[in-house]
Amino acid sequence: MPSKIRANLELGTQIVIAIAIVVVAGVLVKRQLFSASRPTNAPRINAGEKINAPNVDWAQNQKSLVFFLQKGCVYCTQAAPFYRQIIADATNEKVVSLAILPNPEEEARQYLQSLDLPIQNVRIGPLDSYKIHGTPTMLFVNRDGIVTNVWFGAAAPGAEPEIRAQLTKLFDAGN
Image (cartoon, rainbow, N blue to C red; front, side, top):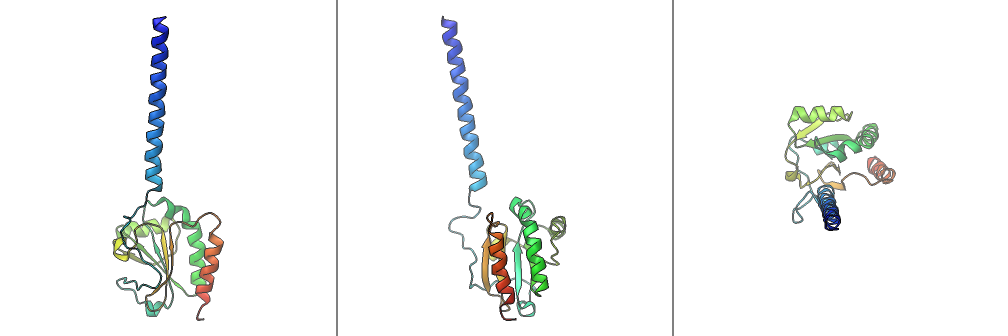
């Protein structure tokens, strides 16, 4: 009888340990996937603010679509097909597309090429200097360098048509 109690006790202990491992793993995964990538007190860019990007002539561009991406960003990679559509729409409307990445230049260009994103205007630098603390982020910027619209993160399922409609209005405004 004591061996049966011991066996049940060992089985119960193993079950408790297994449950604890699953709970801890779940908490760690949740924290990794859903934690904010920016400190809560970090300023972030908003519509109405001027964006300072070295060697970008906003007046010459008239209208610009700025993508903040980085190699290794799963959401950037997942959003690439949507961004290809947006870039095609922008190009047809003579809106300049610009990508800003924190990666070394050659790595950044290779990453954009691997995503098949036809963006020739690439700038390299720390994203937090633009008040961008997570990727992907997309901005619409007018000829004065003023951000008129901001989209943080990947588009929620079903939101892409609405974003394209918003962009179409922005592309057409002032033409």
